[in-house]
Length: 73
Image (cartoon, rainbow, N blue to C red; front, side, top):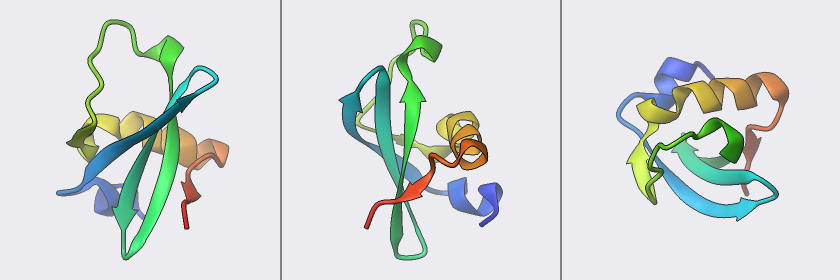
């Protein structure tokens, strides 16, 4: 899947926190995927329950590269 197609007009949803990471999900072609957002990389940003996927592009790209962008069946 191409990153641009995934995030265009899409949203992410906060799922849970575990061991220094916020976990968000995103839907794409009838499947849900989950990816981590490291707390130590947040700084003073505000992370919402639901937000534009575009705002998470860097975390999604990193998760795809590291193999932590996984299907949440």
